[in-house]
Amino acid sequence: MPDHQAPGSPSTAPEASTGVRCRRFQPGWAWLPLSLLLVGAACGCAGGSAASARKPGPGVSKTLPPQWFRTELYLAAVDADDWEAFVAERVTPRFPGGFTVFDARGQWQPPQGEIRRLATKVLVILHPPTPEAEQAIEAIRREYCSAFSQQSVLRATSPALVSF
Image 1 (cartoon, rainbow, N blue to C red):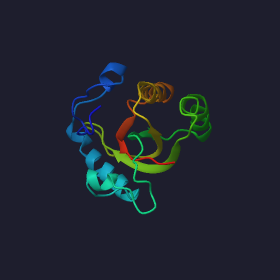
Image 2 (image 1 turned 180 degrees about the horizontal axis):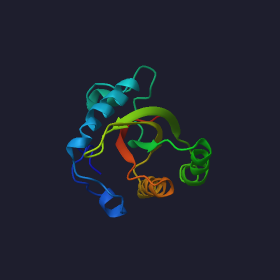
Image 3 (image 1 turned 60 degrees about the vertical axis):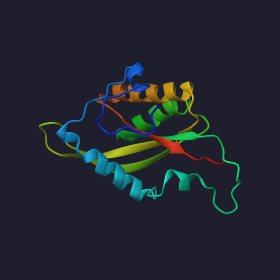
Image 4 (image 1 turned 45 degrees about the vertical axis):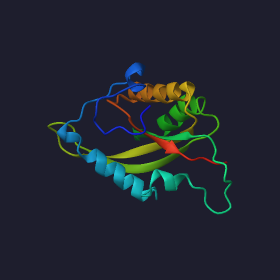
């Protein structure tokens, strides 16, 4: 998996092999880089080089743990009961070790359409880089699209230094 991929650029493995549809960049999707920047700033995830991010802080072991990934799935909000059932039946069994969900507000503009503002759920999963984790995340995306008639689920994955 590449460390990063420009929004809207052609998909490469693993998405291409999982059957999840990815779209090429379209002018109506120009909001994506700005929205990801704003989400990162709001989360306090700003700045610094990759080298500085890997240096342990005071009181932290100088032995770095294995590399993990932070995957965020941006899911259009649905009815609360439907959401709870989806999480209980589709997410928790795949990631029983834990995950985080928070509410967000977003907007997007479909091609030749008006800007749409919507409530969003952000599902954050910290996971090792394994085929099993990859398959589980892609299954969640496919099943969410199918269960709630969504065109897609935005995925953002980045390296993470994780310590328990």
